[in-house]
Amino acid sequence: MSEHSSSSPEAEAPSAAESGSQVFQPERYIEKVSLITEEVLDDEIRPEQLLVSHHRDYHPADVQARRFMSRLLDSTQDEDLVRSRMREIRELGHRVSERIGKIVKKDTETVSKTLFGLKRKEYFFRYRKHPHSAEEIERTLSKLKGRALMKLVDVRQGDRLNLRVLLTGGTGFVGQEIMWQAAHDPDVVEMVVLIRPKTIRDRKSGEVLEVLSPERRGQDLLQRLWLDSEMASKFRFIAGDIEEPRFGISDEDFDELKTTLTHVIHCAASVAFDDPYDVSFKANVAGTLNALELSSTLQEHEGSPFVAHLSIETSYIHGRQSRNLAREDQVVFPRNYYNNYYELTKAMASLETEQYMLERDLRVIQLCPAIVIGESRAGNNRGDTKVVNAPVNVFGRAHEAISHKRGNVFDRTRAAALARMACIFPGDPSAEINLIPVDRVVEGILAALKRPESVGERVHLATDNRVTSEKIRDIVKEELGVDVRLADPTTHRNVTLPVLSKLLSGLKQERLANALEKLGNIFGGYSEWGQPIHEVGNDVRFLNLDDRRPNSEHCFRMLCRHNRFVQRFGQVRDLDEISRREKIWWDLMMELEAETGGPVGAIDPEAFRQAVRERLDVENFVRLDA
Ligand SMILES: NC(=O)c1ccc[n+]([C@@H]2O[C@H](COP(=O)([O-])OP(=O)(O)OC[C@H]3O[C@@H](n4cnc5c(N)ncnc54)[C@H](OP(=O)(O)O)[C@@H]3O)[C@@H](O)[C@H]2O)c1
Image (cartoon, rainbow, N blue to C red):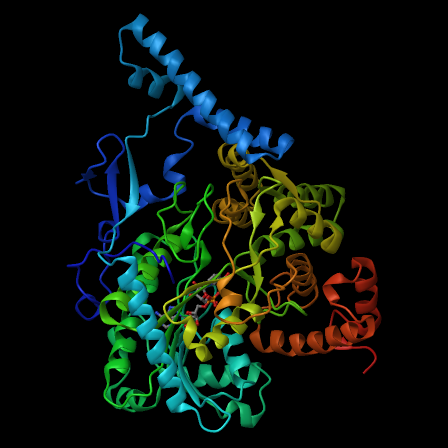
């Protein structure tokens, strides 16, 4: 990494070993700087000040201005023009305030703040700088890459690499794909999966029904991954929690791992966009610190075969970086802040990872997926309902409510009205969304295990063919028959959503009201204008992945098709049943692929639906031609 991020956590801050799962305040990473004097201000930085939501909609004039800008963007599709208009309007506001100030004998700042909600920004945030020069970093990286290569040569036996990997997050969406691909990879001879126990509760009463042990959860996973006994024998499961120092792994287990592990893949995290700061911090930063400390101990152990630590991050660590390209070798505090604490704490975790590399010589690779969706050829996602799946499933269910009209005219009209309300989504048509299928992401993760040249690098596992909100809306219409209306985000947030929520609550539809509110608040940020453009290239340069990245449009079509037929828009929840269905679905998709000689995502939507209905009893999910 030639330039590398110039950021770092405050040097004297405690290490993971001292911190356990302590929550650090943002000052550890971020400083507030005066725009006037360029001095670092000694103010407290509250986590909420670092989010987009803290800096908008505080004044009716601001709301109006943003609405106007959204409309202008809608008609011109020109973000630069909109930005320059915004600047002109702000300047006009300041000039008018100056005149009024002279008349009413008040200072300009007070007038512009009261009348127009305009504040001259007096400060900005930036990440703290680390003390290492570019030359030093270059030297460190070349040393670490060289050592990783030597370690990899040491473990090779014949034409096999003999990799033994500790994986966290194996029960999650990305983790399951890592297990599946590792099972099929002859270079990976052992995978130790760290799992915490899972408490099953009654959905209504909350009563504890069962506690599943890590071993039992692991065995269930193997069943669902369709692995034969030889492949399954690569895996073993150990109990642990990433929020505990050294993950709470017993001394006995750890002694053994010190002499066998070649890699740690730290993939576990809390991927919730509405968690409070403390919760996100504990899972994403304290969890990362525990992982880094564990890997450092492995690396420092005499005679250890340890090669490298892989940190699974997100390309959204760059937040709302709307002007500049979000570079792979830098984390810059985003001009337009973060969408949520998930992004913020993942950025903090990335800085901690870099710190371990620069201060402790830990051999790390940072892998940063964009928005991960089901796998590219069939859309299979092993029951994931997060992120993009959530709105697609809500729209799909709403559409079904309209199509399966039951009851009298009043009931049917009401159902149709509710469904139409559910199909409004805040978004600017031109906002670009970075979707990447899970198989490509994991191809990158497994490649990193074997490529010492990727040590010290941050790699965006993202796409260069982004889709717009408008395209997504069109695909949803073609694939699911749902008419989603893209609403101006500012009006939606401030007017439509509160009115809708009240209306729905009045109609005793609190669940729908909550779902819509959650959708708008949590995912709306990703379809507003000013989305970051994530640089790509390290995936090809360092991981040797194909430079033809998956076709996002096809992948999103497969997500819609899969969620409609396999997941029934999130209504099929039983993971064993999902696994059964996905196996049938996969075979069917491969058949269609072979027949058409191209990707299934390229098949015309109507022809696709017909082919599925001819071969599949979609209700019971069994092959008609079997
Ligand atoms: N999904 C995306 O769109 C996306 C995009 C970019 C980056 N990523 C990154 O990819 C990684 C995996 O994401 P995902 O989508 O697979 O998430 P996920 O489906 O929510 O899975 C999260 C995993 O982390 C585990 N976990 C959470 N807290 C834990 C703890 N305290 N101790 C042990 N395990 C814990 C969960 O275990 P349980 O089963 O016990 O809960 C689960 O296995 C994350 O680092 C995420 O930031 C994801």
